[in-house]
Length: 438
Image (tube, rainbow, N blue to C red):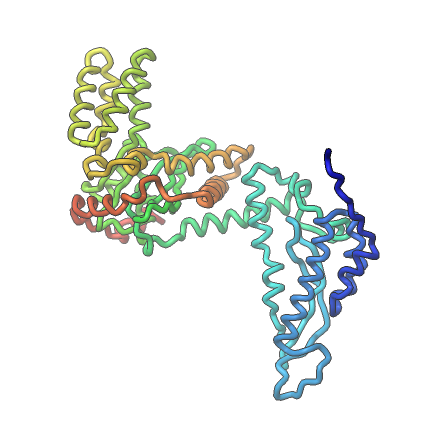
């Protein structure tokens, strides 16, 4: 038998009685708090929260200048209570106007309350709006998904219109983009740099992700261009160098199958740059030049070749396969040979196991790009390139929130040692690329 659950009904009088011990001028809102019980628990909590906030501000002001109406001698007195004023606080995804106490120093200056600064900060609202927008909530629907705060507070609420939501989102994503593009790389022990691109309404946005020596993934930048070309890649890399990216002790650059990215890396980092091309992209490219029945067989052989722990043996096997394909499928053979040496860089460095699987493809950055692609896919009308960069940056930072260290991160020390042994000293002077980065 199902047990009956007792339903406790709270009357307005009982609700008022339960908060009757609240002190100070906050008690003027008791009737309103009791009245919102009928609007639900969240509405009741919102109204009660405003009372608690008022008490916190009263307590802070009391701690700083003394009890209200207390006669404190002039040498000891640092300030005076100065009535009240009204201002906006963020509550339930909206801005609500409420009352707060004021205080003035003996010199006549306004006393800023830390409590008020925390509750009135627009950063909370901006962050919430960005989360909802990235989750697919349209600007006109934010008022529908906002937490219920009661009819009285709803009448005093603002910042819920379509235009207001849009302004907050633009402001928040501008800040996110600025922070992403200004991240200092000086203090990051970077071992791996991954670069890839995504199409945003006909333009290519090249993005960069670094992996530190402990396996932590960090998005570090993006650059917008017409295609994934050498110029765009060079500008992105030059910007990273100018922000403190250190390559003198060795860095592994993991790229997709495009020639332009590799050319840009070599231009900035030198011919000795350690480049690993994505084996998954290579397999797809080769399969695209083969008949369907043959593509599956060749792909299986390539998978085994790229998984060969001995880089030299793997390279020889790949060259043999390209020779087999030469007669009947010359384009497939040409596709396989292009950049073939770069397919085995990680293996030549002696990296094996899970870390080798992680670093021989661009899945780490692709997962970040997929989130950025999903968020930008919800936009129906693009205004300009700045808007594209803002949305991509927001998607990258959203992805960062769920990042974990890469698979095989326990072996990152081995990779770092191998890079230091294998990489000749290549001086990278940021000043050479300041103009390109600008």
